Length: 98
Length: 371
Image 1 (cartoon, rainbow over the protein chains, first blue to last red):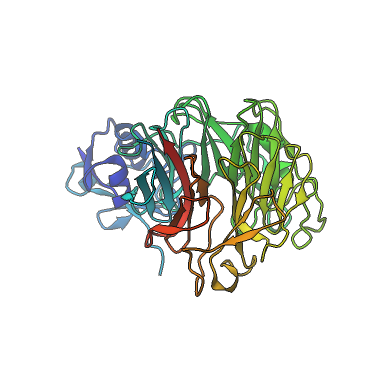
Image 2: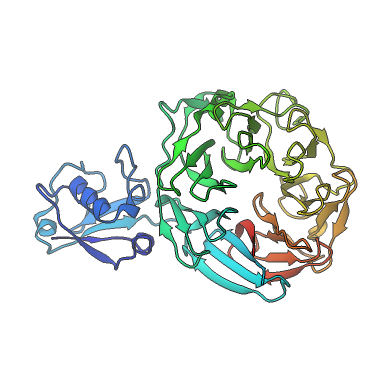
């Protein structure tokens, strides 16, 4: 199981707690995790990445193991600690405002 | 016993205000979708328990919510608004062409007869339709063929904010788009044409009488007279007696003819309401006095309605979708402000009282009259 931490507004939208568990078939890439997340919680489609292009929305970031993975290719495997469930894959709303 | 349900969209969530027909005591529920911008909520006249809501943020984009129980519970439905085919381009600020990009839903307008059919007006300006209760959305691309390449966003964005369905002709619809103008279809949305003849925008357009480019803020129609339209333009209050084929100014004695919303009395088709705002540079009431203006003559002759409204130090704005009327025997008028007040009148505007005073900035107000 892969642990995914999602931001407050998406938790209320999907009616889940802060962290959800996702099962990914095959290689656990960023794209595969988001595919599995959207499959389990279809109301999240379009809120993290574009419906069609699958590009990350501008004010969303992806963190794991203390690293910012936002600019990584969605096809690169996630760190082992995330794949093993020791660390969560974090979806973060960017800070904004004053 | 009959009553009313007031649907309030705000900058930080939605609120539902309910009362019996006396409209003196109110129950407030919310915030629904707390922390999200709710540009619009609207109920179906065919099934008042069916309500649609447009929920969005800059972070997470667009969500459409649907309720089947009058707003007590909600479920997210489809939020994929894909322009038909190759989206094409419109005019950009620097005079170049710019690709159409979906940003948010400004307006949700349920069909007059089918609660599962609903129209959405979006930014960048286009119109979508769902026939399955909001699960799937298809664009009506003919609208953007009405000189869409010449549409250019104003400061508020290139949004389709007004949708009017003609109750006497299911094939006829009217829409209004900021900084583009008003448009009409007579064939169910297949083809559209600009209906801006008579509008003059000498301060905003190089060609003051251009076919498109006028900043229409809001349009209203009484269902018994679908050929008579009233318009609050950027500047000027306008009237058409031929379904938008031509317009005449009816600003008359208003203290300012700049403003955003316009509405028609439910039982008096010639009685209309506007809320004058000082100017396009200063978006608050003239002289710090919040005054609704009523014309019982279909324009030109206006009277200030002030009883119960602040008459000093008031510097709020009333946005284009934040004025609505109910259909009880004594017509109720409602409006929301950017200061978070929602005011109600149960006597056609003669007197007012605040229902709530400290909501987030109000983006939209709609009213359902319940059996």
